[in-house]
Length: 120
Image (tube, rainbow, N blue to C red; front, top):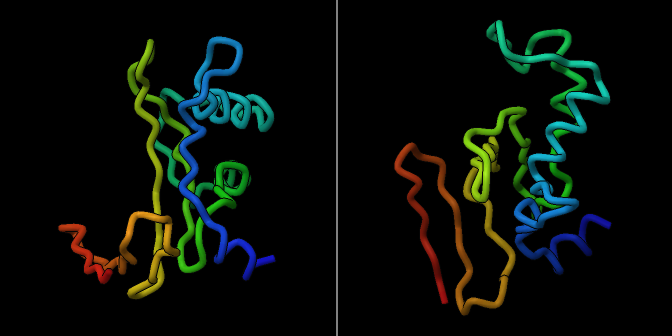
């Protein structure tokens, strides 16, 4: 399965799909909070808090290429026709993205500036 995911990976932009008048990514957060009975708003929480561990697992994305892990944060800023959805992404040292048909292979390097190198 992992090898198939690596060979056929494509970016997932479906968070912006609208389902019953709501963005899929916004609905995903709201559904996770409701399912787990988590209420946010009046306190600071982190992923290490006991009550947040299951939420972290529910909001993990399983569509990332090999070498990457990503979680959707349980916050949505703004709203209306363009809400802001936030994610945390972790990559192995110098992971190579799969070829997504743009004529180049991208190598990601960890840095606060977001540097990357590419080869065609």
